[in-house]
Image (cartoon, rainbow, N blue to C red; front, top):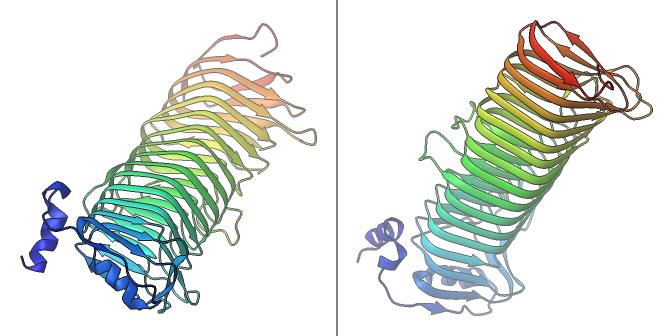
Length: 442
């Protein structure tokens, strides 16, 4: 069968239908480019098993191979050394049923420029791909990059010093990834992107993520839909720690169905020089978003900002620690249905919560605490809300709290207070006060 046709079949049909003999190769321990290229050539069938011997293997990168299948395993101590400075490492194209285990690559010298195809390990138009125990250092592009891939599995990845994103999923479908660790990345730590110019991807599940020092965002969901992220930690980013949204500059889709839970964002926008919006969590231009069980600590500006969110945005179990003045710790603007539950804001922000131009608001369990050194007052500000249901708002500490309600807010309100009674500045005749907590409140 002609090689071009065989590659097409590998990309287009299920692995069970691919024919060919078993190929098992074990390259020699000679540490040069030939050993690795021999290993790549032996990946000619889903049953192929190739072991790269221990030692440093110099490669004349970039290496681009098509139509590969099988298992490529690096022995303990095996590592690729990229000779060429500003280009990528290894790229697999139109491959199916491919597993890469123990992959290690670094560059002889740090890159001088960023390259779009400069990934350490890249997969383009591949299916049934699995990567386990991967390490990439100083790639001139992303560390690990998947582009228009289906049924991807990733387990335990360490990326350091990449010029672009640490781990990048673009227009991918059915992704399960766990144990993603990035540090000192030139762009986002972990990115899920969906460009309008390519087939839409969906159904991504990412867990056990650690991002330390990113020159952009920590974790970004830009255009991708049906995304679940859990058990994460983001520390020190130049832009927002988390981003969910549409990017008009890069012509991405508008994400929908994004759920992020069980994690921490520390120092959003504090890694100088800061770029873009230096928020803890930023949601802008998305539909159906859920944020739960998260801590946001010491952002450079807003702790959580949600703007232009369609469908329903649900926020629960958030702890926000910030002392930034003059900006809201938590804001919801131009959203459809907003549900806030069990949100604790600790610090001394001038404006704890701002909700403006939203169709509906359900607020059940807001706690605002100020430190002993705080001065002035802390505000909750509500305006342009068609239907509000507000209860259990507590202010604690020496600073008095005020709830400012604009005239264009309708609904009902029950205020409970802690050590400080809340003052209500109510300009609305359409908001019904339904009681307080037995005289402690207003």
